[in-house]
Amino acid sequence: MINQLLFDAMRLAVWLILLVIIFVPLEQLYGLHPAKLWRKQTGVDLAWYFINSLFPAALISAPLSLLILTLHRMDHVGFYAAMGAWPLWLKLPLMLLINDLGAYWGHRALHAHPRLWRFHSIHHSAEHLDWLVNTRAHPFDIVFMRLAGLAPIYILGLASTVGTSIDPAVAIVTIFATVWNFFIHSNIRVRFGPLEWLISSPGFHHWHHSNDEHRDQNFAFVFPFIDRIFGTAWLPKYWPSGYGIEEKIPSTLSGQFLEPFGPAPHVPKEGDKPDKAE
Image (cartoon, rainbow, N blue to C red):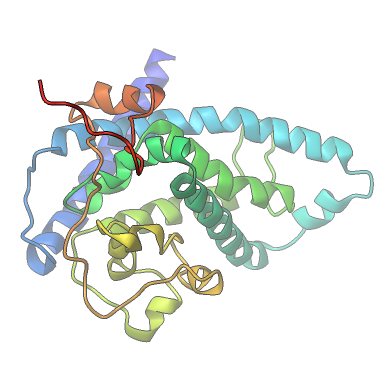
């Protein structure tokens, strides 16, 4: 167990080095805002990178395995066997689309429900966007979002798990979505023109992190036309003027992990009497 954990940590360190090699020069050369090699929350964000790359996958495997077992036991007509026979070239684009569609609705739920927002607000608390902000998130947030994206894929029979081996198509979708999420969070001034309605860019996702009403738009991670279909798209030619949220979020790793489990902060309502001065 310990040896496996050390191996996974080393693997993630290698991935981190590759991400640094790719994104740091790009953000230095083509940064939307002045790029900083080390900012105030970089240490905390690095810790989230390792935590959210190690533990959510283990937490997701149990409910997905139970879902798969239940679905196959209920399948008396061979539906999942027939779907499993589809070629990879046909299943893969459908899986990418359905994964993003499921993640879209999971993402909307994280914004719509106050208790879920308590977890998701950790991600939105970043006041400066760069590639590392992608993994700045509460583990519950990561698990919820991934289950929202992956569960429909298994329910529709587009993926299956044999023993403890992950479906290769699921691995491809997961890796692509992860790398693309690093890209759309990055501090890179790049736009795709008309293609931005087909595939997301930093210009599309930065608006989702804006500190205004547009934070509740642009929920899709890969395919912006999903937002356009459901009326949540916002994509002007200019960029947001600021990022972050109004709520106060702890600056420490332990504080960010524990805060969503605590009592909800009091939100003043119309008619509330202000506190008297001491």
